[in-house]
Length: 77
Image 1 (tube, rainbow, N blue to C red):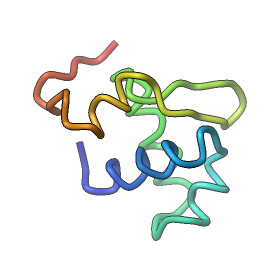
Image 2 (image 1 turned 90 degrees about the vertical axis):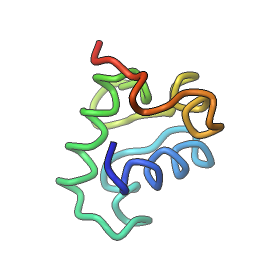
Image 3 (image 1 turned 180 degrees about the vertical axis):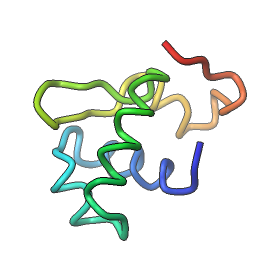
Image 4 (image 1 turned 30 degrees about the vertical axis):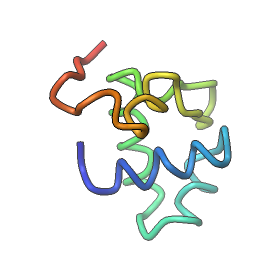
């Protein structure tokens, strides 16, 4: 997990689903960085890819933000 990941997950928690471009517009990270982090978070099951460049937070991502799951417990899918 990287520092920007918590910000990205928190944003998806409030927005429910969004594109790389829309997420990047609300965070101080370039679109390419948001795209890379979304793909990585999806590989750990923290976000779900809905097609194209649209992602949403997953139930596991919600549990992570709530402190119910530690980063060390996550495994790549």
